[in-house]
Image 1 (cartoon, rainbow, N blue to C red):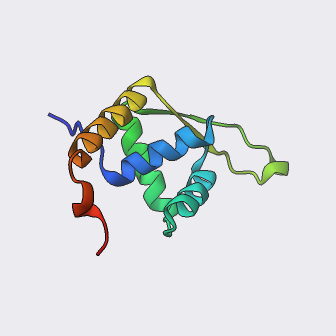
Image 2 (image 1 turned 90 degrees about the vertical axis):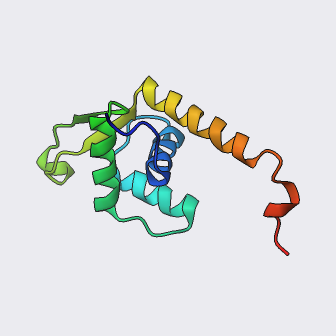
Length: 109
């Protein structure tokens, strides 16, 4: 039996792809993650997470055919599958339910 719930980093990666709006490759995902989370993100960690999410059927990827003028290295583009959006919504519902009633206990001071 495989893991069903999303980890925090997996959620962040999926939300970043969703935020970018279309197929995206590792570099823009890393940059957006760093900007939004205000924390450094390792390109290798992002790529590993993307491959793991692909194995779980949450993202799809395709390899473009780079030309020498573009730097010569092909890029792997990732996009969300409908299952990923469902998992993100499920995670949000769970967190919303957990936050219900917390009120002032979560406020500083």
